[in-house]
Length: 132
Image (cartoon, rainbow, N blue to C red; front, top):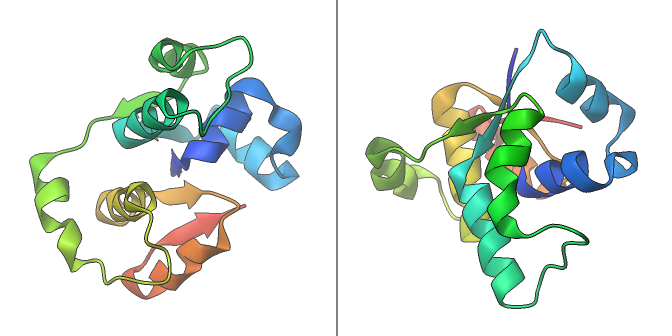
């Protein structure tokens, strides 16, 4: 099965796996699954770190691509098609642009999003599947 990690899921997988639900952790460590990290998450980590909204104990944002690959995750590049069609995802109560593009990537790529954020459930009508 193909999964896309939400940003917090990537952070917790790399830094504090106890925060993952048992089901999410099982999906992430199952070698039969394909786990992807969006470049959007890497950008979000970098921006929030630089503005002081994210503290990374013992790491810096620059390390996340390599850490992701070492954990067996693949990096999902943001395509021009995904970027240019993201307007088709209707605005919901979630105004976070990072969440919106990550949701759109999961939908368009046919991946299940691993996230504890129930706000993503608003996108179920677009066939977004959320696992936690």
